[in-house]
Image (cartoon, rainbow, N blue to C red; front, side):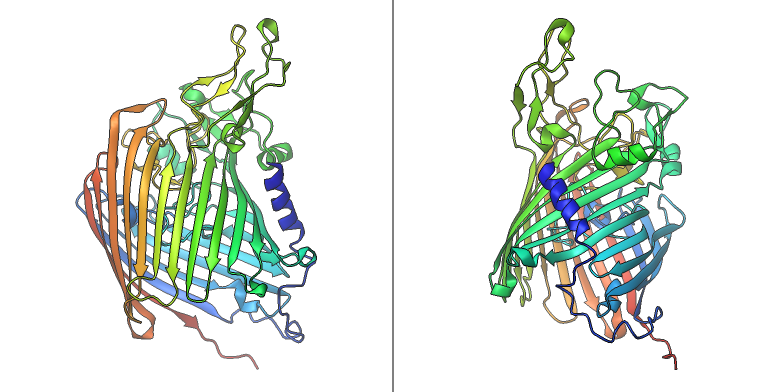
Length: 526
């Protein structure tokens, strides 16, 4: 934790007073800022048709703008002024609004993005809901990040960030840092109430927190093609009203505190939930990932090897737990210097190969994901008679108070964790979080007007520790997508997807998307 927080805090602290990386133009700040300049627009219409439910790769990793209904679609439009428009200035303004009118979705109207952001030198402040890409992974070919993914709707938040790597000159220009801190609020309270039943727990009015810090070692200025990146991504759910917490089936909710101290406990995990009792853990739902990537980047091709280790608490965060409690009446007292070492089993390992001038083959991603261990099958805390402390059964993406790491029914991390939206019994929980999987992603650009993408995933699932499958289940999900680019920035995209197996069911479907992009031009002010 100390290394990760050091990267994070240094990243944010260096966001403002430094000038080294931007080529500020001397007279740029003297000119009037034109907020109506370089406004990008996109209008889009999408339709999906399936025999049962929408196949996985036709609905996953689309920032939650998707549906499982056998027929669904939307009309969408957005206006975005990129922050990069003012890249020549020491400060800049960006904003965006992105709305969709869907059919057979969880909402009748979707405000997908609505934000305003400001940059001063290297640091940015963003207020509102915005789609943020994954870090250290290919956003179109990867199966998804395990903590800060692109599978669910954006959460409205206030976000302070150093979004691009800043080079530290004092360390020989070999070290680069970036990161963010954000607080927000979930918007799916009404959906949770409607989707859930009195037999399952859910939460309303919950708050959101995320933070991340990344360190990159490399020197492209010295024409060194090698680089190494390591980072810590963490997130939390806290505050709000928790119904049926710990399966209590009580009509009265447990109100979680949300004062300044609770915001601090979300940033630095501490405190405990109201119903934890004597075995207090930490306040809220805390989770995160250690991420890393080794990259070789030449003029014509790029290769990388990356890892994503997910954790729900300190047992998998550090693979170490205190196990030195006393006996008998001293079972709550720390008396010995004894620790328990967990195994490093749960991890995503991936490799990516890019041919920068490739045609039929431009990019290839292969990933292996394993989540079965979760600190082991034995969940035991010390008692009067047994002093051993083993904290297993982490139950990834689920929580006894909150509805788990999901937003509007879609998991906020990797979609191979079966999203609650698939559940037919009204439970807002991930029913398959113990699995291993192999994932392949390929794309290419055979011509200037045509590009394609292929995704294929094999998964073997075991359910959860508390509710295991009676026998292991399998699933295969595939998708082939092709996009043709017409004149005047018109685009036509068609995709065919399939699911086979007993985790997601037998699904086949087709998706058609028509879009138009461009830049609005206004008369220049005199």
